[in-house]
Structure formats: C-alpha cells, structure tokens
Length: 177
Image: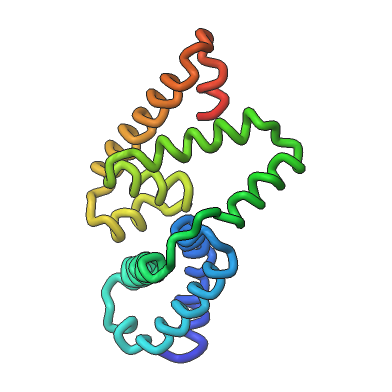
C-alpha cells in the first residue's frame, strides 16, 4: 500500500473513529493521541491491511480494542474533569439543568443495558455507524441488528418513562427520546 492509497483509504476512517474512541476514553486529549497512535499502527501494518478482505472491520475492531487496552491501563479517576467541563459549558450554552439531568439519565439507562443492546445502540445512535459497519464489528446480521436496535431503543424509552412517570402526558420522555 502506497502513502497515497493509505491517505485515501485509511485516514478517512478517523472521522468515524473519533466519536467511538472519545466515548470509550472520555478525554479529548487522550482520544486525539489514541487516534494518532492508531493511524501509526495501521501504517505499520499496511501490508496486512492490503491482504485483509474487510478493511473496514479490521480498522474499526483494531481501534476499539486499542481504546479498551488504553482504558485498562488507565488508573481510575475520582472526577471526570472533561465531562464536568462539558456539562458546565452545556449550562453556559443555554441548556438548563433539567436538560442536563435528562441527558445524564438517558446515558445511565444506556450504560445499564445488556451488552449486545448497549453496543448496538452506541455504535448506531451515538457513533453513527451504518448497519453494514456494525455488522462487520459485531458479526450480527443486519436484520438481527435492526431487531436488537429496536429492542434497545424500546428498553431505553421504557426506563426513561419510568423515571419521568410523574408526567402523565409523556411530554418529558418524548422530549428526551
């Protein structure tokens, strides 16, 4: 693989990989560093990449595994400063405390889903991967992915409605979802 081929085939993946890495690492600087290191590793494995029948799956799986490896090495932090900074900026940008609270509740509900539901909903709705890309990552068929995603969304909806069941009109739950 030449430099030009690498630039045209592999580098464009960085746009899709960044949100996934950021969601896992939860630190902007670490995410940028991880993405740069990942591109370097991919460059060093360009010969393997050329032989690979499914480059997209190879790149995404490598990115995901690398980010999880980084997370394992990372020491637990008592306060997630970047996340706290983002939440504070959300308030400064006009988002009220109710919106922030609802956002946190939805994130918590997603985090508590069974692994296959959580993985599919995060890859599709948060990271923006297509069904074909998710199929390559998870190994599930597209029809199965659609069912899993539908069930995951329904579970999130049900749990959020339970949290906000004091609102009989369902206005808050619909607003969140």
